Image (cartoon, rainbow, N blue to C red; front, side, top):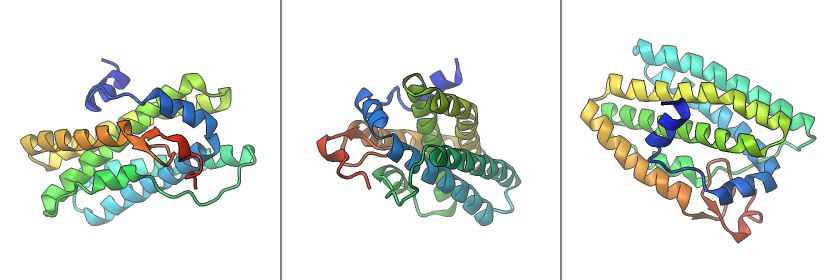
Length: 210
């Protein structure tokens, strides 16, 4: 099984809707600007986890590497944005991450498991969307996104491995099912806002672009 097949299975077989892919081609500026924000947030999340769990050496080693890679991606997408003459401006966050993080439980161990499972889903969906976009993009963007597939797939696996390392396997399995159901809804239902992780675009998604 390839990494993309593994990821699609993890996502419950829910591929990115064609309507989202079509909208991504129409709104490439927003796609790139939001992607830039997401790379920064991914690095920030990794550093935050390191700070909170400094005694968990497997976690800190993986998150240190992940943070460095995400910052490199941030620099790469920033360079593409500059090269295309796109104005760097504020782009509000999508409902996606907030919708998933609303599932986080309160207990220390339970919260860590949930953060790691949610992280795995975010990385998995990012990888799936990069792969879906590659055949539709211009040569520069296609090469860039294709180059991200390996690292995003590794990040997904890393988050999942840590969840099983620090949590009870049965609980992790249960939480994967819970998060998967919410993730499916966020990806497949209408969304007024177009973002990298948004749902199915509706008519006024362009007006809600910023």
